[in-house]
Amino acid sequence: MTIEEKIGKTLAELGATDAPAVEALFAEVRAAMEAERHDLISRGAADDRERDRLCRELRDRWLARKHGLVSLIDENWLKKAPKELKPVVGRAFNQLRETAACMEAAELVRIVPLLSSVGFMAGKTQVVSAKGIASEGALGTSTLTPGGATPTDLTLPGYRRPLGSIHPVTRVLREIEDIFLGLGFSIETGPEVESVYYNFDALNIPDSHPARDDWDTLYIDSKTVLRTHTSPVQIRALEKYGAPLYIIAPGKVYRHDNPDASHSTMFHQIEGLAVDRDITFADLKGTLDFFAKKFFGEKIRTNFFPSFFPFTEPSGDVAISCTICGGKGCRTCKESGWLEMMGCGMVHPEVLRYGGIDPEQFTGWAFGLGVDRYAMMKYGINDVQLFFQSDVRFLEQF
Ligand SMILES: [Zn+2]
Image (tube, rainbow, N blue to C red):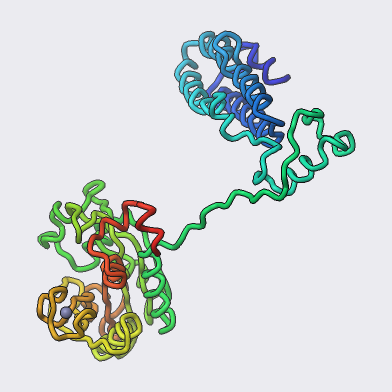
């Protein structure tokens, strides 16, 4: 039975008495529609006039108000459906109507290629166009009538498609990843929609910690958040691989911040974690100093300040000598000579325990840094929003 024949019958006549049977019928209709559309696209049209005609014909076959196939489905399937099947048929019909929007003539004209245009399927077009008229029969190009298509001038240049470039944040992310991959770290990723357990509890952030306040965290529900940092990946990796472990976890994180020049509700972090026997603060300092020199240049000095994070003990902030003034003091570094670079510390024994690691046997260090800020520092950009506005004039500079 052809698809028209099926559409000409009622669902009862077709023996479709339950939801799966109805859905299968609609799937068949959609497939037939898609096949016909695809067929027209792959055949193309000789010229504008033929394309308009073919597109209009196909559109009318499906969408004509009176005898179009979609109207007939409405008439024969939906209106005549038994009461109990009405909701199912109605839903499937609405879905079909939405899909059928791609059969509007204007939509089809946009994507059906002209065989006489250079640039589309260059190889095929050249053969058809150059020899199409002379040896039409031999090539089997029956859609080309003599005089119907203008031979194409093959010496004309083709269409040049603009090449994209790598986003500056991705560029910096990869650069940082490369440095740590060179040190023997591997890359771990985790979900951006994270459980409260991994985002807070397992990181030793108790209920009372201000970071749990709504102001900072975007909650999906009481047990699920958009992760506020990449630290949950630490716990997930510890659970998965145990110790020893050397990983970095790059990715997007989310905060309930008002967007301004230095804040964005979505930004990028890289978290680092090293867990092994006899890991000390000296390993942390050595590694991060090495990283800073690799990334910012050999002349950079690092400075470690005491700080506080619930998931590390002791905790520190790392600053680098100002990349602008070299440490003498300027506006960028607020006359201090230092620029804040990341937070770090020795992994809190509680966190190791949450990850299933015995803190008597293993110790570790961790750090977290904001990639977008690094990209801003590296390229001298003063507004983080520029990264995410997709303005080509900004992005094509990289
Ligand atoms: Zn400075």
